Image 1 (cartoon, rainbow, N blue to C red):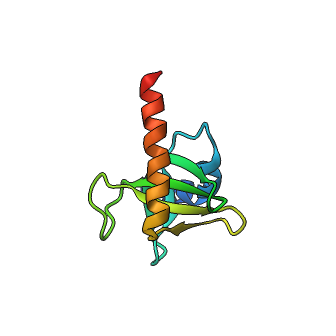
Image 2: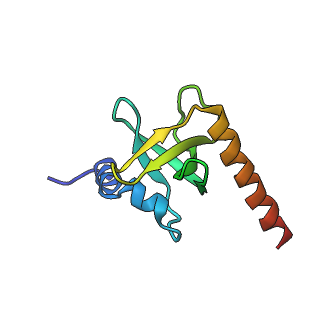
Length: 113
């Protein structure tokens, strides 16, 4: 029985470890991570930022697949839990502000180069 393109694409999505992709500096592919209903959501990775105050790693992802409560082009902040191989959505405004401040500095430094 011949597999459809959709089935082949689905298998490719499942084969990739999203945490490994996020941590791979050379990764240029979009990341697929399941939502609360275990439906894969496609994301574009914007940044990976360590935060000294929490000693944790955070990533900014922009959903390519529409997400409820997220405007088009708006980023979502996740903690990268390497040990449990998962992403944890961040809603703490203090952490969001700290990460965005570091991200803004990185953008400014990059534009000076």
